Amino acid sequence: MHDANVNRAAQSFAPLTASAVLVNPVGLHARPSVKLTQLAKGFTAKIEIALAAEGPWTDAKSPVKVMRVKAPQGATLHFRVSGPDGEAALAAMLALVHDGFGEA
Amino acid sequence: MGEIHLTGHPASPGLAIGPVAVLTSEVASRAAKGDPAQEAAALKVAIEGAASELADLIATVHGEAAEILEFQVAMLGDDALAEAAYEAIAGGTAADEAWRAALEAEIAGYRAADEEYFRARAADLVDIRDRVLASLNGAGTIATISGDSIVTGDDISPSTFLAVDWTRGGAIALAAGSPSSHVAMLARSRGAPMVVGLGPLPWNGQPPSLALVDGDIGTVIFDPQPETRRLFEHRMAAANAAQIAADAGRLKPALTADGRRIAVLLNVAAPEELASLDPAICDGIGLVRTEFLFEGSRGLPGEDAQYQVYRRILEWAEGRPVTIRTLDAGGDKPIPGVTVDDERNPFLGLRGIRLSLARPEVFRVQLRALCRAAIHGTLKVMLPMVAVPTELNRANAMLDAELAALTAEGVACARPPLGIMVEVPSAALCADDFSAAFYSIGSNDLTQYTMAAARDIGAVADLNDAGHPAVLALIARTVEAGRKRGVEVSLCGDAAGDTRLTNALLATGLTTLSVAPIAVARLKAAIAGVTA
Image (tube, rainbow over all chains, first blue to last red; front, side, top):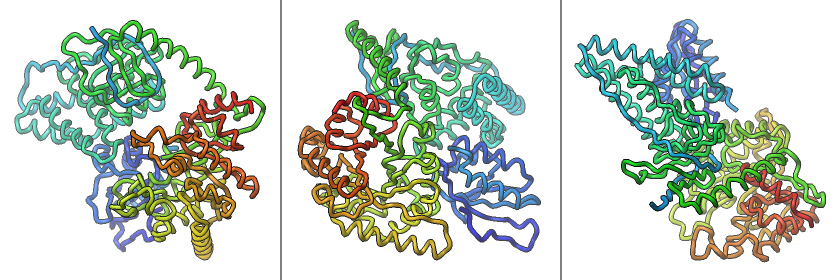
């Protein structure tokens, strides 16, 4: 589940952050990484992921870099999003993680 | 020439016999190299060429295979993969050397991963590396392998695997490799036997001509003697016949020859085991081990993470009962941060429910997650290693408190019935005294505590016999207590899947057995042969 307090600064494109637990088996592996990056590429916002709230941050549009994170099942995935469609992007990314990337 | 026996790890079940095809990693040398701009352009063309080859290949396959190749296409399409290579080329390195070095670094990162799953992805990166190198060097694509071959080598790439028609009875025998690799997943779904981790293949130059692969136990015999081959072929024929018979009965309810209905449940150690299973093969899940949630280096799992996993398992079961065992750490299952170190005899120490009661801050989180998951199906919760009724009473009180707290917070929840594992002789002898909602006999620990013999100590392993009359008497006593109290009794240890014991277990009055998914068909077939 994501944090209840999604941070919204007054500035319009200030970064939004939220987190979600990876519930799908074996974590952010090959297929989920492809789904995550494909979804991220559909938004103009800059989207980054990290395993800790303070980073280091990784470009969520790069499958090579997302795989380097090696996020296991049960890990908390943090998102940082900034851009005109940031809110929609963040909601879509969280939904994908909550849904377990559509895996059984 | 004598036959060669090698032992590795089973990665995909089944038996196979066939001619040996050795995978070679020949690298065609690249003739000329140009200035940095030409080299960068050559690499770009090679990467695009490899991606387009993969796209053609995807069009010919379906499902899992296509998804694995799509992963490779996504990686190839990402500039981050070749970034280091382009930098090296700008510094004067040849395109092939630069690409190889960049991918080697990437592959090393995967091989160093903590999790087996990520380590196994190294094979996909090797596949990508070689496809681009082949394209760069103008080499032809992978040599065709006949589908009746025993393919041997260090490791095999997904592309090579997919180029073979495995319906013709071939198999895979690898010096390295992993049961978690994409190829192993594909081999299991296509029914190709596969053995990994055989170690260095012991021949120079002339490879053997014939091999026997046993993907059930993980062995390979090269150049078998005629008698070895004859016995193996006999086993293959028997296994085929048994498989056909067992598969036919797997989806049907289990009935003894005299018409008694026996419930067959599943033991589950990790939720991913369920992904490829049809819930119709079982009458529910008799044991979900929850230790997997607590393993690894990420600290203890939170309430939400546990709830999501429990919920998924309940949803898979489609209303069938699911029995989840609370954390059974300690003994032979140490968990950093939970179990105590340096116990002189951990099997007689702080383990199972004893540990949970001693670590209420950990236990409470699990009880809350279970109460929340209970609304998504038919959940039952059982406590491991219970010896005396006060342990059950204390757990019941904690469950009530967490349920009340969740209700007060307005969180949707329900109270699952709380039962006990019967694995300590005191619990079997005094089963009547427990106000348990059900009993589940853990035959592994019950046997070792009754016979005072561990099964992993070779010198006494023969004493560790679940079929000993003393163990069977304790099982019968538990069944009788359940009958008197009107609650269910099941058995979920390895004895349930040992078909030599099926007769004796059903003779105690047991009507519910819980086994690993792989044993379901075999157990149902054994039950059908029980007459009294």
